[in-house]
Length: 187
View 1: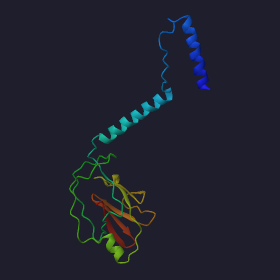
View 2: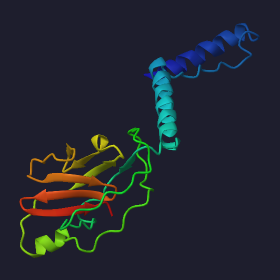
View 3: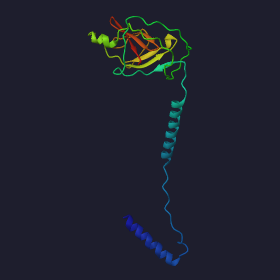
View 4: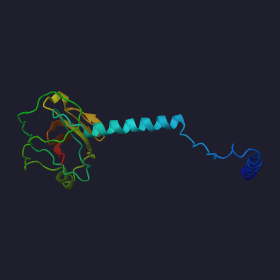
């Protein structure tokens, strides 16, 4: 159908050119299609989101709080607790922000007297899965928390699996399941 309309236009143009050749001496250019307004707005919003994401990723984190994402339990090497881990003198201020930063403070040497979670499992002890999703350590104990198996816990609280969070340390957490205490480290 469009071929027929184009042919009719060409024949009409040639007929009119014979009568008035100066009027049709310039070439007719089809108008370029423009982007709809919604597309321009969408592109602008995407550009703004990209700029905000870049700013959030490139800003320098605050050194007030230590936040670390723990590896999955398959790659982690948890160590259970047999003796308590001594408290370290705190060198950071107690002001807290939720900015993720790498743990760069000096951590205490790991005690070799601790039984590992793998040792407990090798002894035949039945333990629920331990997935340390997030670890937030602060000089102020009330600001410390972890995400354990997807559940936010503070010191002294227990998970739905029956794991009791005894202590949050700079290098991990100290858990208890029944009468078995053990530590789960971030590395």
